[in-house]
Length: 513
Image (tube, rainbow, N blue to C red):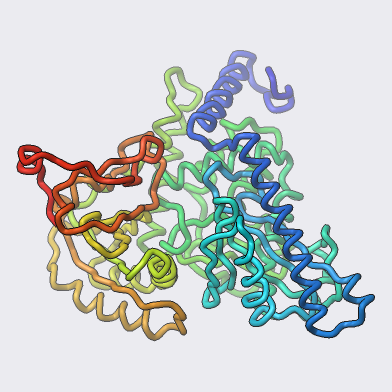
């Protein structure tokens, strides 16, 4: 046994050997699926964080000078960068984004100094591209690419002159009198640090979280904007299971994860710290999960009646499969089998979003997705249960950049015209629910049969090697619609160009433009 006898206490020797082999095979699957970043990738990400740290230190000195602070205060002041999310927890993949919090002192404002001065400073860097200010989100942030890695950078303002590089965000001294925006921005970092302090084994927690996130993505129950479980939800659930199974192996932790939450008595909240939850009052939402950093805060959740049913169905499926994980012939691939959308639903709501260019599309899609919960609730009122598949697709023949979603409907017989009031209601919500600063794009809702799905849309994601879920687009001329798309060898969903087809090939190809 390679992992300490404590974990196999009470098991017959042959069962302990099977348990170990099962864990080893699961770790190998994680490697095969690309869940473990290479040393080179880790080095690159550390370099990004290091360079961002140098940038924000330079920025805060400039801000202090603009505020005409005394020279000794300018010399003493400091700002810092703290990674959180999947990278902060050490569960990122080679294609993961970096979530990093910028923490600055009391005199550096978010509206002027962060969104203007720091944003302008980032734009001067040759390593930085695609800089966007997302001011209307619950957690405002600057989004950009640094050496090709997407970075989400929110801001928190503390009531001190200088921020230590190793600032303890759990220390009440630093949290006094901070504003609501800073508090929300800090919650992700604070949750990460609490989780890493609580779990008995950080390495086992990280492995379990990688596994359950892969499961959630494959089975279509990952993504808070679509009403499912987000990264912080999954992290807390994984940490909860680890806390109650301190001597477990990886494979037994996965089995315990599903057996625990398949029969969890929701809306009883999941709480990591027992003394953090007061029994008074009702916890919010259908699946309340409490943040582990005190104050009886709950993770923001968009779970609806439909997504609750889907999540619970997948918990039960996982629990059923894991009952046989110690039996001969058990295959981990069955747990991570992609959800078969195209064969499960007869009807789909098609959500078509478009914009004039790719930058406008990115902002527009982000804004519309932040309102998806209201759309899902309206669809539930009209059509019943709905499965909001988070996979993004595109219509390649359309000139404008676009993103298309196909949400499954449970009903077998549907009045297609019922989608019209849903679209009207959603358009009002999108246009009236906030001050969107970007260029307004297009929204079209329609209902299509499964047989009407485009031939190139893999709604069932049955290709196990397909790792790309985000659509890419290319502008095409009208005379290109009979050309054959050429896909990347490395990214199966990515169109890199078009190959001219001869007349015979064009006649035999069913393309609707």
